Length: 396
Ligand code: DOR
Ligand code: ZN
Ligand code: ZN
Image (cartoon, rainbow, N blue to C red; front, top):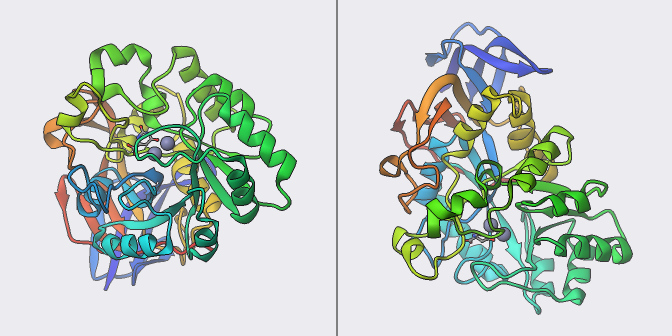
């Protein structure tokens, strides 16, 4: 079975060039004109990106599947042009043992897009960390947030950064510098750090001279503390929405190459939970990130090349994902077709995520996801969903 895409435009060294793409057995077989395919789709000059890689999501399985699940969450990913996601360990049970990881692996087989897993820390699980196979990174929570996984023990921190080739952190404010200090003093090898959802200027300032990777989330790029009044519990997240000056520092960090990835921190909670007197931290984002970024590209806050680097190429490289992140012969046929001019209206009524709401409800954005292809299979096209089968990512 071959699939041919004609009249696409793809990014080449910052310029859009016309191309046809031939897909065979889930891989990109040819870029350039091809003679025949079992199915041909005319892309009518829309722009083809590598499928987006969302390196930070909470799909909530097992344990919290009343909020989200691998089926609903991966369908939301399809709608958002995301073909691969990395799932966080704050589930029930938490992913801090090999047994819990294997249980999650079985559950994730239902995914419509590709997936990988983070492995969490506890004070006592360093041996489990050593046994865990094919994980994206070890995730360490140094602040209180959803899931009670805080392990702010310096000995664990030292052990993890020395053992794990990549450690991802939930670290807010001054804690970022604390981690960097421990890393610089006690790390004995080439292992790297990845700071999740960097939200404030002081964090950017601490990170700008370091070689640690920096992730930012759409909610911190497109919302500020001024929105909390309107959003109430729906605007509650960790790290919290910050000041306009913090937001400006994130955009500046994108411009100056300090920021390495944009990832959603897709963290769905039910409407009832968010309306309660103690709303849990977190907002959904996997189906709205790309339209928000395309809209920002129109106002020159970033370029399409930036989006491709931050949401496709860099995550593939940082997490060493085999066959992902590029439109190139031999790579996996994970592809996202976008129309930069077509409008997207975000509405709670059309949210695919099980939570059924978005902090951007009512927004009309310039830019839309037209089609999402996973492993050579069309999963989403112009509002309709089709059956695809996601696979676990292989980390090199
Ligand atoms: O807002 C957040 N929600 N921040 C986190 O660190 C966790 C996440 C969740 O799991 O709900
Ligand atoms: Zn976090
Ligand atoms: Zn998170």
